[in-house]
Each structure stands twice: as structure tokens, then as C-alpha cells.
Image 1 (cartoon, one colour):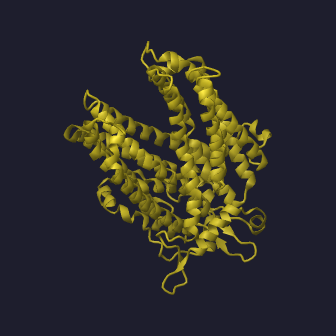
Image 2 (image 1 turned 90 degrees about the vertical axis):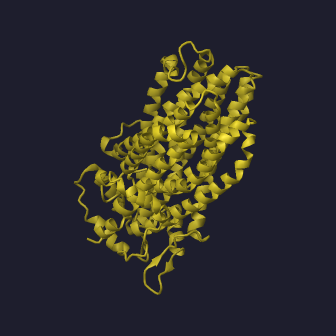
Image 3 (image 1 turned 180 degrees about the vertical axis):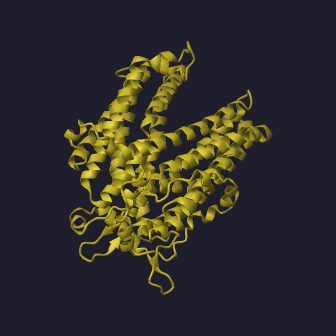
Length: 565
């Protein structure tokens, strides 16, 4: 996802005015009601404005203006315009309604089953399924390792997996930055730019994977000490598993980049098919490698995972070559720093955000572990967080969907025959309004379903004291989904607008707020108080989204008016 489009840099002093937070949180429902009934300039005026922009400006401004100034010429549009972006434009146009006899048309904010809703659902459903597959396959791995009947085997595999994913998290910026970049290049009809982006991301990703793989191969015990104590009996299981699993890093990078590229093309079906094939291979090989005929034990689970990653990477490589999204010549070229700016700029911000989120959730976990010595509070928290995250998968999947649609719709396109322009900031703003409404409604539905599931907490633990302790946190988790629905959509908007540092700073401020109230909440209300910090955390994230959409983002009234000048 890219790094260019917003007209105003993040104003830390604005974000620092925490006195606005209480007011903004009281208006969470209206955060998606960005007044789309204003009188906006025609798309031709927006194009004229963006063409006047001076490129000799700071990197952040240049990156944002690069997308806003991207206009497809009549010849290029006729030969290169993609089906996916055209479909989105048609969905927006056919969903418009006239305003009380006026000339200006708007897309209604609330879902109504029109073509725009069908387009959102068509992209969202496969993405949600993709998000759901990984936890399912992890559960299958855990099941077969658990069949060994050795608790240390489970502990060793879990420790090694944690270390592996801690290394892999260094690559998490790729989909967040790359997907909207690909969506924008595709909307412009610039296949060469899309190809360059895919190849650059592969070069960067494989370079990081090489470093990570070398660290694990040469010092596995050292990295495992981050989660296992010296002399831990689980080390004998964790070490061979981690060494074998590290070889999958290279193939995981290929799959990650390809997955991001296809999402940018608004094709979420192909990644779902590839992911299903790869994970089916893993699930099928697990019992064969762990037990008979190979009888490798815990290392067998790692071997099965590596083979499944090889299969997925092989399929993706074939598909990328067929779509001409990669060429071997470009893969062996060192990218120029100038071409890497968007990736590096966005990647740094995404990593900052990841660090903030990890600190927040780590502090919550530590707080629950220290509440009592019986383990009741920790067990209750585990149950509540499991239901919280299960519903969160559906909402989290809407973040990349929002980023794709926002970045694609921000690009102005010109019909070669009629000369009519589509896309641009005003059109993207109407799409964002609809997406925010979707987030709000999905949060209500998922929260309601979680409330209905509370009587079934006994399925997770037969202990009555654990069930009782988990009840109120589970209610809080259900209520939080309403906020999460708008938070995840709003953060997707920031990514689609390439406002990565705005997103990062918003999450940093939210984490600081959580850490500040944690000692008091924990001491006063125990486990319920720890869960109460989620309201502070997600409330501040939502406040950052409202500030972005109303005051400093490309869809704020002030920045929309600036485009007239």
C-alpha cells in the first residue's frame, strides 16, 4: 500500500489535543457520515488541480500527490483499463442517487444491496475466508502434534512457532504497502509499474528472509531463548522444528507478495484457491510425517509446512509469470532507491504501528497473568480473547478490502469515447462512506452474535469459576466489536490513502493511553479493568480515524476545498 496521496501531512499537534477525544468518541456513529452532500468540483477540475502540483516537494507530499495526480490518457485508458477497476467505477455510478432534484449525485451511505454492495461483498468474502484458513490449519498442526501425547512436544512447537512468526513479522509491511500500490497502478492501466512493484517487493522480501533464515540456522538456541529458559526440556523439540521451518521463509515471501499483488488486482478468489491447496497439502502431510510412514515427530510437522509453502509458492510463481507481473531479469536487478521510496516509507510506518500493537497486547497478556496464582483469570481472559479474535477476523479482513477500494477509486480515469471522468477524491469519499457504514453494521451483528454465545462458555472450560470470570470480559468483547468495525475500516482508509504515518502515530497514541490507565484499571477492577483498557485503546484509535477523515485526511472538508484552488 502506498505512500503518497494525502494533501496534508500529519499534524502531531492536532493529534495531541486529547481534549477532542471525549467529544469524538461520543460521535463514533457519525464518523462514517462524512458529509457527502457538499458541493464538490467536477472531476475535470480535480484533474486540472492535480496537474499543477509541483513535484519538487518533500517525499511525503510527493508520494501522496503522485496518486492524486494520476490520470489515464484517452489512449492508455482504451488499451489498458482493467476490468476490475471499471467494474468498481460502474458500481459507484449505478449506485448514485440524485439529491432533491439537484445536478449532483451521491452514493447513499447505508448498504442497500446495490452494485457497490455486491462489489464490496465479492471482494470481502474470499478475503475473510483467507484470513480464517491460517488459524484453522494451525489448529490442525496442534491436533497432530498433540496426538504424540507429550506436553513438551506441544510446548516446543509453540515456542518455535512464536520465534518463527516474530521473524516473519518483519515482512508484514509488504501487503499493507504493496496492495494499494498495485491497485493504483492497475487503475491507471500501468502494467509496467505493477510489474516493477511486484519484482521490487520480491527482492526486498527475499533479502529480509535471507537474513532471518541465516540467524535461525546459525543461532537457533539463541533466538529460542527469547521464549524458552536456559535448559528448558522443550528445547529438544523446538530447535529441530525451528531449523526446518526456517527454510519456508523464502517460499512464504513469494506467496505473501503474490497474495498482495492479486488483492491489488481485486482478485481475491485466486489467492483463496492457492491458499486452500497449500494448506490442504499441509494437513494431509502432517500425519504422514509426524507418524507413519516417516515417523519424524515434531520436525515432521515443520517438514510438512515447508512442502506446503513450496507448493503454494510454485503455483503463485507460475501465475505471476503468466500475468507478466514478474520477469526474471528484474528479479536480479538491484532496485533504485528512488523506486523503493514508497515501499520503504510505508514499511517504516507499518513496522512502527506493529511495534505499538505488539506492546499493547503484550501488556494486556502480562497483566492477566499476574492477577492471581490460580490461573483462573488467565484462563478466563484466554476464553474471552478467543471469542473476541474470532469475530475480529471478519472485521480485520475488511481492512485490506477498504484499502483496495479506496486506493483504486482515488485514481481519476477518463473514458476515451465520451471524455467523461470517473474516480477521484469525491468518488472515493462516497465509497468510504459506504464502507464505514458496513463496518458499523458488521460490528453490531458480530457483537450481537458474541453476546448470544456467552451461555456456551462452558464448552471452553468445565470450571465454574473460570466461566464466571470470563462472562463480563466476554460482554465487553462483544460491545467492543461495534468500535472495531469502524476502526478496522477507518485504518483501511488510511492505508488506501497511503497515510501510513498518520496510522502509526494514531496507534502509538492509543498504546500510550492503554499503558497509562492499565495500572489503575487493573488495581481497581481486576480482569474486568484490564478489559476496560481495550475501550481506551480502541477509543483512541477511533478518535484518530475521525480526526483523519474530518480534519487532516484527503476526504476532510478543508482538503476537498483546497482542490478547488
